[in-house]
Length: 205
Image (cartoon, rainbow, N blue to C red; front, side, top):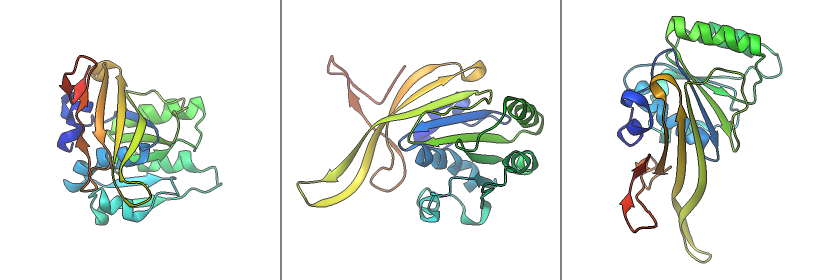
């Protein structure tokens, strides 16, 4: 896991066989950053759906361009078969939450994930994740504020977001993290915030 995100997940890294959901404005950016370290260490990352994801965003997130694939199941209704084939064949699968799954399919896929050790990241751009999947870690991105623009001039430089964290099992926790997503260098960074008592914090439980 890239260092700014290590405190979001148990043991500082994604757990094989687990399902992570990410919802809210900036969810896709966070999903890419969660996948970056795995990609750089040699793992394959496959994006299923998310047709509005620009390849340039993948490169800006520093994923290995030679170890990422995009699959568009379209309206074929075969995305469940696609997911079943990918689980165990690749390490990280980023799934568009708008591709609906029946409860029976969700149970079958969850069992397959646990057996074969792939990681499923379900992304809902702009909203909460409504999924029948059994979720180990849930991240919600909100309160996005862009920085860098003046009055009618300037460039967008960074986006300050608040990430809520909930989980179960080893990931059992409720926390909140302030991030720059993206930061000025187009990556991710911890954003300091100020509590009501004036204490400056970067991460609060």
